[in-house]
Image (cartoon, rainbow, N blue to C red; front, top):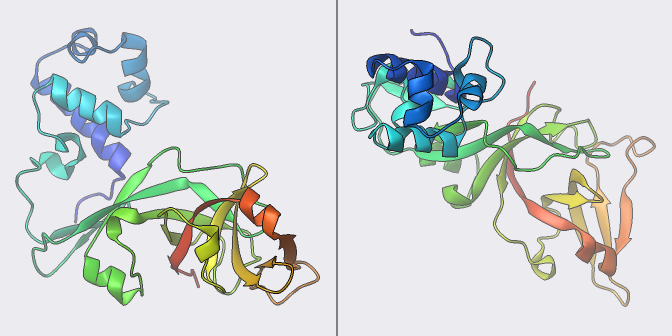
Length: 249
């Protein structure tokens, strides 16, 4: 089995190989893709400081007359040809017993963590990887959302334990959320005062509408529930609803 690589490592390797195959120096390659030499060096230099993102990869592919996705192919494969018995999940490559072309591509945000406690100031700003997965597996995980609405982020802290443990991958449906249509008892990811948070939401519909943000951790001394008003609920910027969490043992 070949060495496991992330999408950024694959793009870096393929970009260097493409430059070599074209017989261009780094200066010539920078001119060809309409990029400064210094910026290109940050991407493919001896000690890269930047990852080749989606827009940059597409820019390089277009400038070199390569099909979209060319730089994402491991082992130098053209995107029009698939290697038999290969499937990709997150940053790892696995061998399957059959060739399965029916996969969906879900963006992964490894640097985005929804804190179950006080939160962290991160958001879906950078796609660090992609998860290619069979839709049937999503169904087995109990995920009913459309794949194009899904994102994978990660958890932090212990307030949602045992439902969610720190550093567990989370499948989040980022479809627009109407606060009037929130599903009682579901777990939501939202921005609050600059922090990305994750809580189970309960709404009471009495004379005065209140909202309870609940932590699943039974230690309520350390992780107390929070009660907010309807007005405060509308101040929350909902990112999405938790569809599934792959809990680490």
